[in-house]
Length: 421
Image: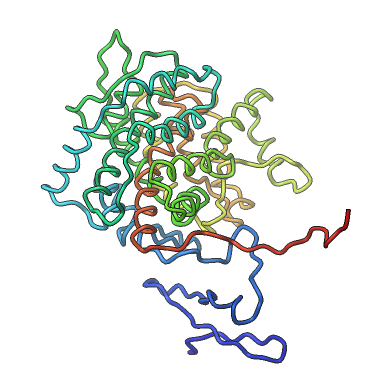
């Protein structure tokens, strides 16, 4: 097999080397294409363009495989905590007991946010979308921690990572509590990382809060399943912003804004909004399944199928079980969730959806769990961001360590040619 690709153009032949990843993925190295030929590639959405070499996450959409640093998502969800997975993504290996203890202690010691940040939070109207608030608060961390991070200093880099891992859940919980009109909470260092997230979000001032293990387990799995997903829109945003040598907080803030979009992190919110619309129209799920099959009908079934996974979403299999456990544990009687279960049942038995591999995806089940936990619909994407944080950090760190060049895509100009006044 040839180790290069030849391109013929203007009676000349140009040769470009092939590169191969550890999972046998092959690509054409075209970094010299423009200088050699005067040509660029045209690839809207970069669907066929590799922007980097990465050792963080392997994704095979055809076979439904997702691995972090070589570990399958199935094994990690069964045997690891979210904080262990975060350590794995960021530092490359699962932590030893001593490393995990140190990591947790460092996060606990940094689990405070400058009180002046509350003034920024207070300035937002209650109607502000939580993702806009979270992005702003994350960016504002720079003002309260203005010293630059020396990327050649492991100590500086670790300090920035710890700071963000410690403070981000506080900021996320504050956005939730502002929406709900609740007083702001701080971390309880006697709890685990995931238990703390539940505590900061749900504890009411006049009540003790002891989250059930079913709820903690479901949140733990959701965070792990969302922790990284290769070079998606928000991760690519974090890397390209970071390529300008912008700091970690600014880069992650940009990633939050990218995640906000309904085609990315807002998909689980769109699922619940669809279920509410079906309920308002009488709750006839069979009617909407037929609408989904009708090519001339603008209705789209949200939470089914995936643009990357061409067979099944491996994350959905895991989180479906957690969703069933949460609904059973909480004994919730919610007509919206009943509609969801009816859609799921019909899709999994309908040949139209089976033949096209339009199975419920992770967004379908995560939306169900968040609604069952009483999390407002507009907060769903904030929960996604909580899970994605270690992935963003890992990708940003890898980009900086590899000293990748500043991101600067080319274009094909289609505007007016030179005009005179």
